[in-house]
Image (tube, rainbow, N blue to C red):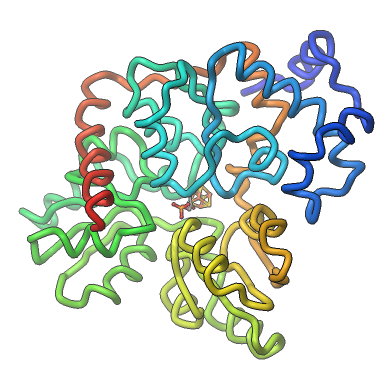
Length: 349
Ligand code: 13P
Ligand code: SF4
């Protein structure tokens, strides 16, 4: 576990991190991308960290890959690449940086390391896990194989390296349907997200899809009743749900897609009002680029994603910790499953 009081004291000895309205005013380019959601006083606190991280990034030849659920000061202030899980995995294969700092959760950093065994991959807080990744082990995959002999295993990218290594192919939420359709088998095992599997099954009735009983603690909270009630109170609001939500909730939405899918939908449709049925930072991060859209409604925070802060990213780059390691034999098998996902996705399914 990170000793934050000690880390904070060290960082303040090494860098000038006091709130700095003058510096904040000079960093208007960065601020303009988040001004709708980050008050000026907060920006004066963040700006010294953003400046220090961006300088250190150049010194270390590092790149920051940030998931769409990162806070706006990370997403707009320090990230080199932002995106959904598939986009981050693809970018990890393209980067020429020596160091990758993963602003996201642990399985994402593992995926970057699997794809870049020779590079240094840093995780600012190793405690940033995922309820889906934690729900299954490689033994669980073996159990499913024994229960459904001959059926291929498609594991969501939200899994550990060991589970990826035990699977035939990975899938992201952005094109799980296309990947399932592309497989020849009639019965397909999907792990570990039962709701993603059920949402895919509804779109691919010609296949028999069986699933592991995992779920996302953020998306499982959205019920069909809540969404129906929200629509009744807010008529005309476009409701956009992530496919990790229960299928009854997805059925109440106007659109369902990965975080990239959500962003593309909002950009194309520009609804007057939208409710994003997903993690809270999603709406915050796209708010400034879409001033014509009013984002309303409740949202749920991912406690794992929110473990990543500017302070921890600065410490990670300064101390070059914590470096992700994946055993070479596990990484080799996992790479096959991840690469199949990337290749099939590049072919449009
Ligand atoms: P995507 O960004 O791939 O849609 O995944 C969402 C998520 O919950 C990641 O942990
Ligand atoms: Fe995992 Fe859900 Fe958090 Fe994504 S939002 S990291 S799936 S717990």
